[in-house]
Image (cartoon, rainbow, N blue to C red; front, side, top):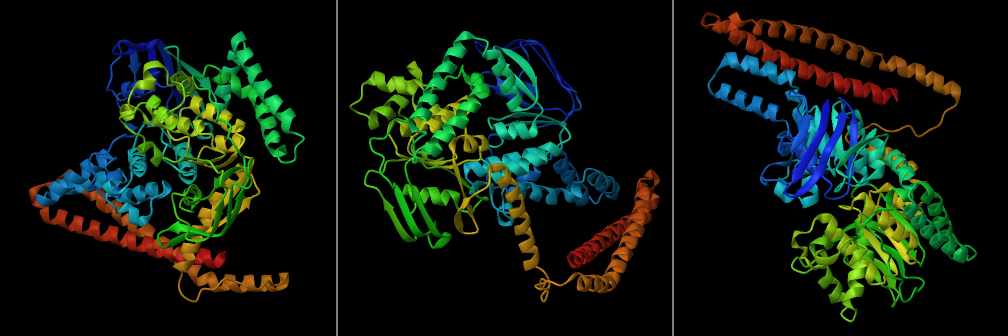
Length: 637
């Protein structure tokens, strides 16, 4: 287990932990939370042995294998699947030793190394690496691409796959969902729930934490506090403690009063009724959720637009795509003030294409797009972080878009995004991804948009900033179109869901929980379509409905027809059992040290030859059995 006792950890003059204690038992899954700079990454470095305690102790079993997610990639020429396989260092070591033994014709070493490779599941490693890549959204073609051909976000996916590939007793993941879409996040949730080792996870995605961890370790006031349950339970427990403070109570009352005034003002108006209902739901949630964030350094709102024309955007018969490749067809939509829409859809279906087209950064291929002359778009996308002037400060960025505004007003506004004092004057060059994202949001919020187009705005944002953004979006009175893998943000800020899938855009009538199940079925259907496309010619689905009597007769005929197939499957299973027994006998012989003496050279060669032939036979039998079983299942369905 991981045992921390009276731990003091210091970086330079900054003391991160002081006399902290923590115990994590084998197999526990814990989320590690804390403000930026609280010491989360330093704690990870301590676990990896890269830091030593300034006082106290941190004990991890010496035989534990530790895997962690790299933040950089050095070898850009590596093929993606090979890069992922590099995560299993023991596998690579065995393979290198095998190569040397083959070059030296060392049959003794070869026999031992092949047995070691098999015990390490090395023969299935390539397939397992491709399964990891597929789960994280890589196509078969991308598995063979150079690492350098991928963007920064996809390289982070490769680092995640490499960490998952590494056999481990302790897995350390730092913001693994930052560059994932919802498809990949749901896959990762399943993978981590099945993980048998100890997991420590830094994440700001509350739904992801709730799905994966059963404990929260909170770094606060230089201490480590262990909470039972996922993030929601942690937030509730911490809220109960904070609400005992008078200052917290007063701030919460002010927030409630603001929402109540909004509800009272707009509840009776038909055009605003939906928004008022949304605020009412937010007000109900505030009772338990808000207090846990009352010490947040963030507090901001989107400045009210000068005009709210209706409609803001009207698109008819739109064809959207890149170059000559159409992705979405016959798109019809109209955005009016107060529309609050979450856009859902599988990876690659066209969500970002829709946002980019409406933002004007991607030309419409066909159709008619009308925009109001008073349209003011606030567009957030990840590439905009790279377009910030690295030599300019947050204050200078603000001054460029508001040259007539008083400096103090700009400083006050930036303070709501936690850019205070000298920090507001520092160049963006060395800012973190989270700080750049906050600055991009500040620039949008200042410019009084009446339409927000947000494409994954929470990437790099911590929990407190996500909460502040949620409150700001709840108070925004214009229209909003949101693409996000943060299910909590979608749930708390949108009133309507749209679905992008199969080249179409349509209203989605269900909720997020139903969508996750729909997404799973969608992926299964995709796999089934591929299977059918590759099925033998002439196979046709049943198109006629028959009565019960006919069904029974057909079922009896089908059982009779399938009997030879079942017999073939049984026969292949028996042959595989015999072949595997033969292989076991051969490997028993290879395990005898005498076989590697000089006088037994011919016998060794014979055994190795039989071993290779037997393995090949088993592979062929397994392939035949799989084909026969699939055919049997397809006819039995």
